[in-house]
Image 1 (spheres, one colour):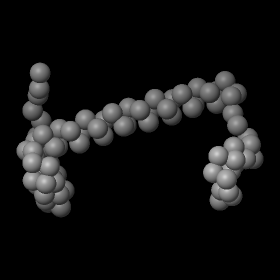
Image 2 (image 1 turned 45 degrees about the horizontal axis):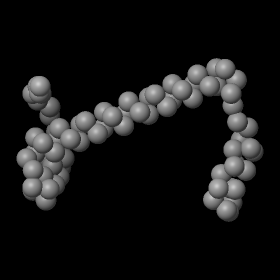
Image 3 (image 1 turned 180 degrees about the horizontal axis):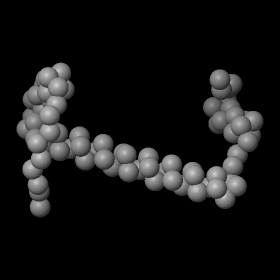
Length: 81
């Protein structure tokens, strides 16, 4: 099932939408729907990760900055600034 919404977009965004939809050989509506779906999925994932991090912090499950840096440096094999 689908629903239709109307949203205002600036002219630069519209031009990008038009250009990319032509390059991908799909309609502007299809591309806009895909972009919105992917954006919302990403935002939902980020919010869940943030909430999980806050919950861990509230429970006292934290990693010291020095320890975190050591872990990243061992993974990357060099200094992290």
